[in-house]
Length: 152
Image (cartoon, rainbow, N blue to C red):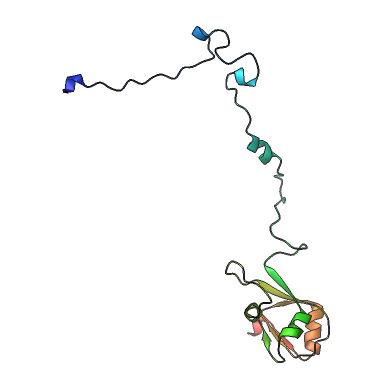
């Protein structure tokens, strides 16, 4: 083969139907209707689904919430501490995770909130935990102490 014998590849032109010509009046598109019109594309089903979601200010999809409380706060009852802790022990989120009271999810330690208002028989030190008024009163009445973050 020589240079003057080379040919470029022949490209076939795409047939444009719907403009009269050899295919007749309807040009293979049938009669009337959305599909026979120029630019006749059907609306995607996904678009209708998306349009149903509210897009106003303040409307957000709820994540994993339980009873209106955010999922990153683990709630611990005082009666649970009464059962598993020894007198004089310091309660921290890390210790509660080790004892299996709270779960560490995704490598993140959740914030711990102590709830309840029963009378404690053990003296406990509470550190790095949120605490309700009733729980604070019960712990301090038993001789325990709540260590605030500023005191550490």
